[in-house]
Length: 156
Ligand SMILES: [Zn+2]
Image 1 (cartoon, helix red, strand yellow):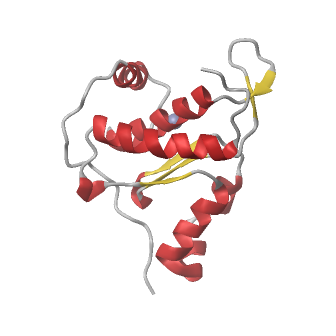
Image 2 (cartoon, protein in one colour; image 1 turned 180 degrees about the vertical axis):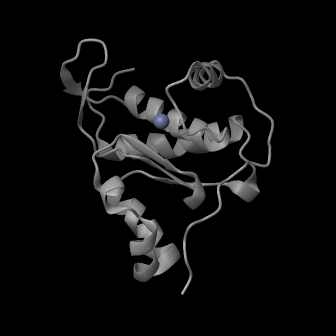
């Protein structure tokens, strides 16, 4: 794939398509569907719409949400963040900073979906990596009611 000409907008478009596709493949039921935010502002907008300013401040831990991460999973809020606005990352193999590619974003997307679908908090395990490989190999997972932690959000 030629990636040189891809910008944030293309990344976001592709992420939305792949998000839908992988949610189906890994068996996230309609009743437990989650949202994808492709940047911090979008994440905040979704949360604002859902909870309003008052509850937003109670819900989000400021440090966590403004820390520069490629991706985050908030199972109890039913949302994942894949930050398409990150432009450069540290290459795991060479240890040198390089431009981000769509493959990096896709890795992040699948990673966060595995956290959600399989209710796994710890991602530095063989089990976690094996699931990622099975998904990348195209295995279809049965739809299953997910164990989602209770929402901590308060209502007014
Ligand atoms: Zn993780």
